[in-house]
Amino acid sequence: MTKILVTGGAGYIGSHTIIDLIDVGYEVVSVDNFINSNAQTYERIHQVSNSEFQTYDIDLCVHEDLERAFAENDFAAVIHFAALKSVGDSVNDPLQYYQNNLVGLINLLQLQKKYKVKNLIFSSSCSVYGNAEELPVTEHTPLKEAESPYARTKQICEEIIFDFLKTDPDFRAIVLRYFNPAGAHSSNLIGESPHNIANNLVPIITETAIGKRNKLAVFGSDYPTRDGTCIRDFIHIMDLAAAHTKSVDFLLKEKPSDQGIVINLGSGTGSTVLEVIHSFEKVSGQKLNYEMADRRPGDVIAVYADYRKAKKLLGWTPARNLDEIMHSAWQWELKRSH
Ligand code: UD1
Image 1 (cartoon, rainbow, N blue to C red):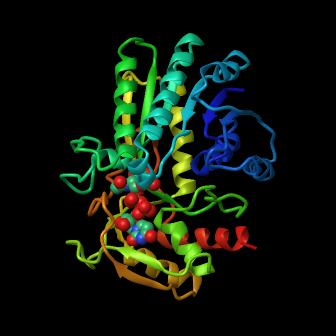
Image 2 (cartoon, rainbow, N blue to C red):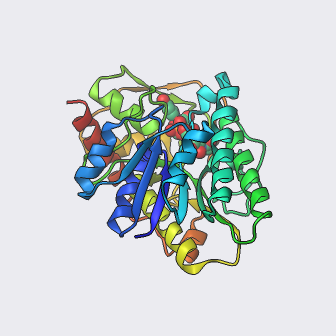
């Protein structure tokens, strides 16, 4: 069986991707240090996929520890999720973000080189576009100044990968720029369950509805958009997971001549913050306690994806809409809170 190393496999996107990889017949090895995830997620993955896989409790920043995973396995490809991802925390502690996100990637690439693992899928983010010049955003839309240290780590990581590719003509990388992943697995056994306090819109909505929080603050109601609130592109976590499996297939089977391929992963639809709230109210039958508040520093006004490249290269299209995202997120909140 073809073995894939997944870093951050106990995390939100990693766990959903492992299920999808196993489902299509890949063997998975996961590395995670549970900095913002939970070992229990592995048991849930076993339950859903009905299959065991090897795991390492390893911090990617410790080179010798990570090397164990490479020495003990023969990987065909790596999917690198493990990273810190809170925009706000990165503003307060940029060094932690640079240390963790850059050193982790560098160690990984050094070991991929040493052990001749020639394929990489990298988790990037639409935040690399900054306040994008054009909408929808294509892979050719120029990158603007990063709005946060988190976004800058993703820009720098992409550059590190592209520089590294020039040193080995057999090495290939797909850089996946995610828009706003949300929702939960259809089994309702896994979903987003961060250790750290949630700071993304969808979990904050469900936590407010269930009573873990008092009220949702809508950050900004005077933006130049159709209802004054920011516009984002929400993509169902299972659609996002499937795109990773298709990316692995593409690298291993097609062996593309292009060494470094950037791909946007979004639904292609922009939704305002108020539209997300209304979708939640519709599918849950709950009235949400929210109020308009000041703008949040660092927020871009509007961003949504052109995903035609993902469709063309990977044969991938998003299958689930905003209501399905909000429904699954709510089912998951009900489950994990009781
Ligand atoms: C940002 C990045 C994304 C990154 C993610 C990681 C951009 C464009 N996107 O997403 O690439 O992967 O962080 O965390 O930089 N909101 C409220 N009230 C809240 C919380 C959020 O109104 O309590 C609003 C925000 O102002 C924003 C929208 O909801 O307009 C989405 O916010 P959030 O879920 O934090 O994601 P982004 O900031 O879009």
